[in-house]
Length: 280
Image (cartoon, rainbow, N blue to C red):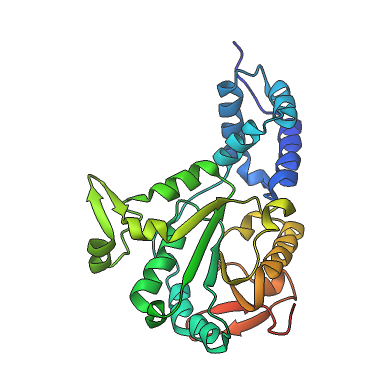
């Protein structure tokens, strides 16, 4: 049997299709990564070549293969307390502002997207438990979303490698984790504190129910989008935030270069972006 190959034309067709489906734009520099995973799925599905696989991918009624391929194509590299200064900003600057102007008893709502394997939303929960005095007075709702169903399952299980927890203080590790061989199982209370959901940011039907958030963490996702997709994502997040809500991006990302909808807030710990208090 001849080896399966992906031609330049095949790559371009797939790249355009995947962009339409997910908003993720693969540059030519990612060619090896994309080809390798495409060939893996072509072989796994018993397809003869790229053409037959691509037909199946586009027209399969269940959409199962699109999801399988998306799980394979998305990168999930993270760890606890990554870019910790933003969590410091959350508890020291953002949450005090939110609670000071709060006029109801509704939960403070936080959305983490992408969830990856759960380190970021669990860090939010951990940090608030350990560093925010207001946790005893306010209910907090943490929702974390990803396009990858496999990684969402892993996040719900809450079992992490030694590398993943290497920056967690020893006291926190002892309090919230149980060591199981080479891995660390997060405690049930923290597992229950985060709701994990599947969301494709490029699908308005997926994001429409997500509204009235006080804070959004969207870190190191928009670097995989092109300018059009980034702008659309910025507008989606704007609609998802309450008036006066905040969004935190990755250290190499700048909302000012994407959209003029947000106000830049320079807190002592970090720069974040805020929806106008007057916005509706």
